[in-house]
Length: 266
Ligand code: KIV
Image (tube, rainbow, N blue to C red):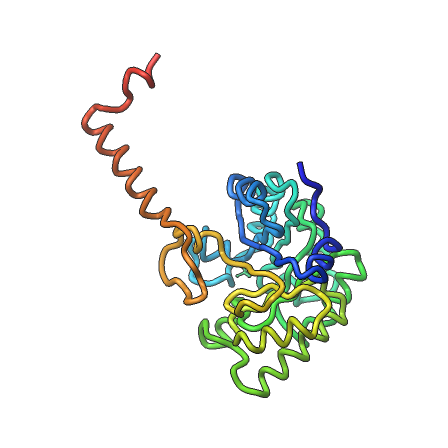
């Protein structure tokens, strides 16, 4: 088994210009597959809400749900660094509650780090978490927990002033102690500028090729998600179709009394 990756390894990958791979997982079997495929970071994203739990947004996801899924993922990940999303409002109410919630994702869940969304508004939170020994990934650009405030899922930081603000936020998050940043759905030229300005890794999703690494929702790249697919997703498989065909074959064979065959019987 390869040695478990740490946040120090990720810093070195940035220095060595070795691209960092990051994907989401919400359960044990997928975590095992990502780990065995050599994916560096497994994110237990609160995309759990849309992808697995059937919600329209990430907003309804709770700490109990996140903890349950983080536990399943960490049982399957031996090498990959597991990062757990802190769900909506779990890091806004008070410093004590924030620390308790983040601590739970590490202590009960087994995650190695947490991810929180936002810029200036979460700097003190990043400081408090890192002071408590909890590594933090920041998340700038399209921040899905603020979907109702942003008025939908759209490309962010398109004006010069918004781009300047995002660059400032990225620098401040690094200063506050974040060990990495996710940059979601921003112009590629801005992501390149932010990546170059930071000494911590910047991992892009819909942020072009010049970030230190890339992240996608695994169900999107496998063709397993239902509904809208963002432009930044590349489908590497069409598992929904494959699974549909397999299920129809099973149904037909049972109805036609072809399954179980002698080799499946005792
Ligand atoms: O929740 C999630 O899956 C995420 C990724 C899209 C970065 O935050």
